[in-house]
Length: 342
Ligand SMILES: *Cc1c(COP(=O)(O)O)cnc(C)c1O
Image (cartoon, rainbow, N blue to C red; front, side, top):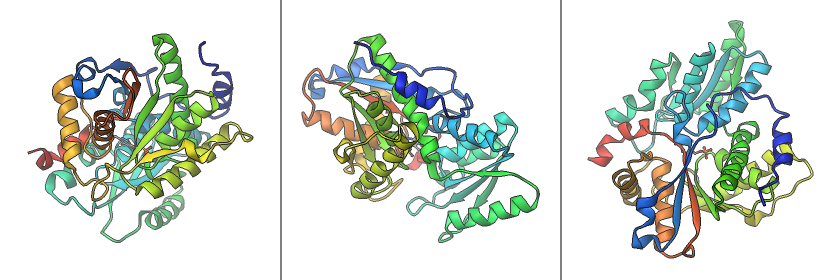
């Protein structure tokens, strides 16, 4: 029986959304990887959210569809957000602003673990400037949210109407973009006649994980969502994801509930810190590239794919399991991590 997505579709339709994607992103099977004996008979698939068309693509565009919808409804003329120098969210916010004729102010914070020239000037931050964003590079120790509050006051004083987005665009509204993605995946699963046992995602600011989990919960699907935390510890990321999923569900169906046990976060791949390369990440990026011709980034996708590989190799999933890995983009990050791959 196909999924009944009417509840989810109707609930999502209540929120303004500015179209930034060209349509559903493809789901593809990783045939060459799945054939390897070490995959223990699991069928690996990818959801190509790296193929979203604007600004180099990536998962943030799905959240930005909702956030831009909200911003335009409020009459905003300036998008304000923050992140690290290699923030994909900042880069895509800048691209979206360019596309829609809005101004963009990006507050970028230095990394605790990467200070080389490629990291500070190549990859995403190079593209931010091409998209015409105004960039505020913070000194170490300055907190971006307090800087943002002052910047917003300055902009208002100049007669502008700023719209502020949180880290990663992961407000409950932004996360709705991934609840919509859950509906998209379930429709594609019906068309492909494949039941996905698990959907595997990187978990950073947790909006991607939370949105997908809210979506499958409302659709009463048995597909489980597994997130690999790359930013917070497993315990923190679990708590944040539970709270964000509940807030997102609240927007869609105020009477719905979510069991704590539905939140599955694995912290084993984070390594020393956010953005710090790990051997498993390097191996995962190389394997996907050399065996399937596909690119994942060193900060998010590489670590999450490393987690999926470790679980599959350890025989954690029965033979015949269908596992869908969400490719979230972030490819400019590869150029910022050149010396990690050397
Ligand atoms: C932001 C990001 C993620 C994580 O998404 P969250 O919603 O912040 O958890 C994953 N992959 C890439 C490439 C990203 O830029």
